[in-house]
Length: 358
Image (cartoon, rainbow, N blue to C red; front, side):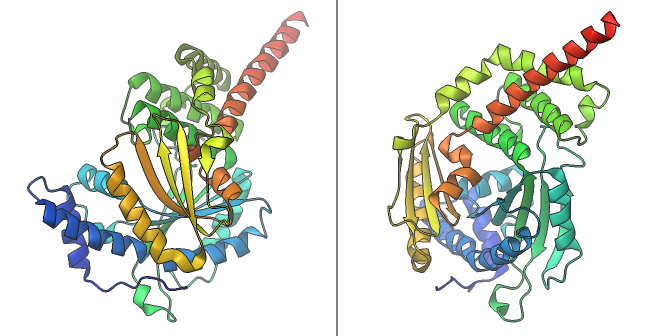
C-alpha cells in the first residue's frame, strides 16, 4: 500500500487554511488551497493506520467486541473549525486524523486509557480531554487522547497529530442521535448550534445517560436528583416527539448501496433530504483513488446543502454501520436508552409506593 507523504511546509498548510476561509479569496486560489489541504489530510492515513493496529491489539485485553474506526476530517468541518476559532492554524489542528473506539463500560474506557498513558508508545501524548469526568455543557461525553506522531522508522510523518476517541456504547448512542437530528435540522447541534429546544433536550439526555453509567453529570445538573433528571428527559422527549422523529429518520437497509467486494476504505454520502446513504468501498491498494473520490464528492456536496460526505476506514461494512451509525441514520441504541429511563422511573415510583405502604 502506498501512503501519501508530506511534501510541503507547515506555513503552506496554514496559508491554505487561511485562503479557504477568506471571503476575498479567488476561485483559483481556493482550488489550489483545497488541493494542498486534501493532500495534507491524506498524509494522515499512515499514522492513523499504525495507531489502529496498536489500538486493536490493546483492545483484545479489554473488550472483545469493541468497535474501531478511523476517519479523515471533512473539509467542511475543517472550514467551520477555522472560522469558529480565529487565529487557529490549520497545520496545528489536532484532529485531522482521528480514530474512534467504542467499548461497553466506563471501566473499560479507563483500562484502555491506562494502557496508553502508562504504556511505552514512542509517540508524544500532547493532551487529554476527559469529557467523561467533566462532561461538556452540551451533554457530550467521551475521552480524547491527542498524540503527536513520532516514529524513527517513518520520519516523514513525524509531527503529524491525531486524536483517539474512547467512549462507551451509551455515550456513542447519544452522539449518534445528536448528529442524526442535526443532519435533518441542518444545524450543527454537536457544536451547540441550532433550535434551543433540541439543544436543551440533548443536554438533559446527556445527564440522564451519565447517571445510568454512574458518571458525573454536567455542572448545570449537579444539584438535581437522578429521578428529577430522568423525568425531565422523558418530558422533553415527549414534547419534541423524539421517538417518532428518530424512527422516521431511519434508513431502510435497501437504501444502502455498496461495493460488494468490500474494502478497507469507505466513502459515505448521506442525503438527509432523500434519506438515502451511498457507500463506495475501496481496497487497501486503492487509497489514492479513495482520497480523490473523497475530494470530488465534497466538491459536489457543496452544491447540495442536504448532503454530507466522509471517508472512513473499518474492517467491514457491518462494523462501519456500528461505528458510524449517524451516517446511516441509525438511532436504535439511543431510543433503547430512552425506554430504559422510562423503566427506571417506573421502578423508582414503585419503590416509593411500597415505602409509603410500610
